[in-house]
Length: 281
Image (cartoon, rainbow, N blue to C red; front, side, top):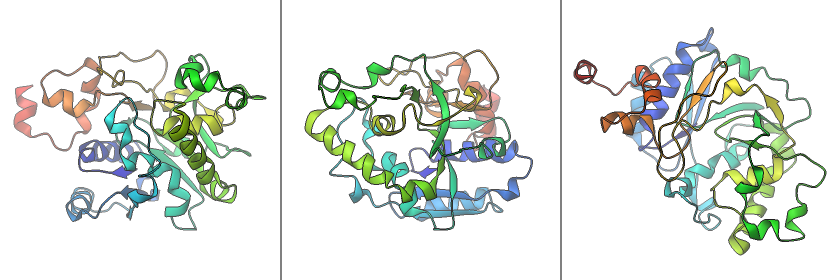
């Protein structure tokens, strides 16, 4: 997971939910990536979770500053949002597999189940959504370009959300996927082929070529769209992970006294709320 002062509250809630629903929380190692040295953040985690096995790594924002193109939402343009691309370079060499999680999630199942997914020959495992209109993730200039539009030839591209992924770090590094993602970011700079930050480069490389896992592991979009963050309800079916992707974050909506009904599922894991706030609710 990434560590950022603006999302620390969400990260703490996510960690709390993972530990609370795990059968063997002592088996977990958390890897946190941060863009700057902030002792207060480190202290917050270690004091809140004194027995947590975790490491903090500094992500050098200069690796992506010249490669980031402006997207439809400012939060998506932060360098730390691109840190997931560089996990294979940052994590220790003995880490072969990781689960990458966004900070706006709550896990309500034992995450060890997701960890055990059989990747086979794939590099990425994630819930896959083939009913989504895939063409909307790229611009008209992409689809009208004879060369670029052939990118997905020979595969059925489906949307997946990069906020919840199981990654084979060793294979990622061996096959040079960081460089492949960066190459698409260069194309984006030149031709503007997408609008959504760090997600489309992953889709360009992996869509139609991932290990699909059950949708229960990413009930995404609970933060609404990227413009207004309107309230949304849960999709039908079982749930193992709730994801407030989109503009609306539950802690901000709760603080504003204008929460969506779904935000009350996040609130019990919020370690920053005072007892007085609970009473007032």
